Length: 226
Image (cartoon, rainbow, N blue to C red; front, side):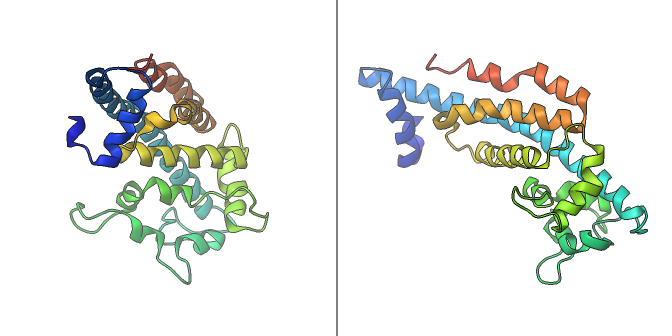
């Protein structure tokens, strides 16, 4: 199994195994166990972060639909195709690609609907709508945060929220591509709390449910190195 991996990936697990096993046979066996466990850990991270991605996209969709419809925008809930005010700068930029064009809708039969576009956008697309740490108050994303998102969050600290969302998005990408998460188990461990905090900010009950599931902490306890 280990021999079937590309050399750089194989070496990652062999190097770790050499620190915990003495004979060549034990090193190879431990390296294989570590590779299998890393795959299991990645699947658990993917499950946890996937729940948060869906929760986040549904929250942003609802919040922007409401913001786009109410006064003074007086638009429609179709914020992806008919954005108003500051939202238009982000969704249909004067230079660049319209946000909906990033949606993966190839498998949709007929003309894609608003919900099809929402479901087809990536985690990164949603993170792109949140303000960065040092964004100023006149920034379009900050304005939308203050007017569309913060009023509906239980913990409206935009810097903390954005940084946790970014961290979850990054480690989700690493898990999806089966990168060696074993090299950064501290970050994996933090992902559990990041996901819980994000979820509780959006929906207290779902946050408590995720906290109690403990998928990531339980997977970490199954490390072959323990």
